[in-house]
Length: 381
Image 1 (cartoon, helix red, strand yellow):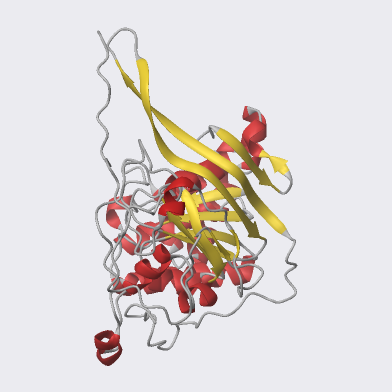
Image 2: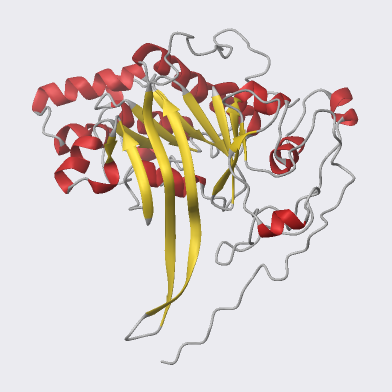
C-alpha cells in the first residue's frame, strides 16, 4: 500500500484526514457525464495546401460520471489524455465526437453565449502557478476578471469581493495591488484557486494543481481544496501523477491509458484491489514510506515504451506491454464493465483481470507491438 507524501501521512495539527463523502449523496445525482468522448488532433503537412496525414488520438471513447459533491481522481502516465479530457469537459477543447452533459445539458452543442453561462459553473485550476497568471497585471485585477467578464460587480464592490476571496484562500487582502512575482509558488496557486472560486462554480477541474510545488506547500494547498469543498459543496475532478495525493483527496479514481479509461472504482477499492494489469503496475511504482514494507513490495516492470497515440495498438491498447496479454487482447477491445466478484461501481476494461493475490512482477509481455512510432507519409509540396 502506498503512503501519503510528507506533510500528509503524519497528519500534524491543522491537517485533516480524508473523510468519505456523505452516504446521503445520491448515487444518481450526476453533475457531469462524458459519453463516448473522442478528441483527435490532426497532423498536417504541406506549405500552401495543408493536408491531414494522421491524427493524434488524445482521447478515444471515454465514458465517465462525476456525482455532485465528490472528487474524481484521474491518474495515468504522461500522454494518456488526462489534461485533454479535462479541457474537453471545461469546454476549452471542442470534442471530435461524443457528448458531455452538465446537469443534463449537452455542452458540446452550446452557442457562445451558452458556453459563457456554462463557464460560470465550471472553472479550472491550472498546473503551473507561474504561467497561469499574467505577470504584468496586479493580483486584484486577475482575481477580479471573472466579475468583469460576467458583469457581476465593479468598482468598490468588486474590490471587496476580491479581498474576501483572498482572505478565504489564506492570502492577505492588503496584497491586492501586488504583482504575481511578489508571491511564492504556493501563494500563486492560491491566487489561481481564488480566481476559480470567484463565480461560485459547481465543478472545479484541478489539472495537477500541486505538482509544481514543494511537498510542504502541496499539503497546504490540498488541505485548502478539501476545506473549500466541505464549506462550499464543490465537486472536483482532480488530475495528478502523485498516486498518494490522489488517494488522499479522491472518492473515486479513474485510470487512463492512451486516451481510454482502463479502470474506475472507489479509491480504496482500486488501491487495495486493482484489477487492470496497468493499474497494478502503476500502483506498484508508488513510493512507500515504510522501509520494511518497501523492501517486501514487488515492483511490476513493464516492457517497452508507451505506443504512439498516432497509431494506437489494435484491441486492448495495453497489450504490447501487458504481462497477461493473449491473442484475444490483440483482436478484441475489452469493454469497461463490472467483472466477476467486483463491486457494482468497479469497472475494468480487461479480458483477463488481475485476481486477488496474483503476482505479475516476474511475468513478461507475451504479445509484441510491431511498430510504436509510425512514419508519416510523404506529401508532395
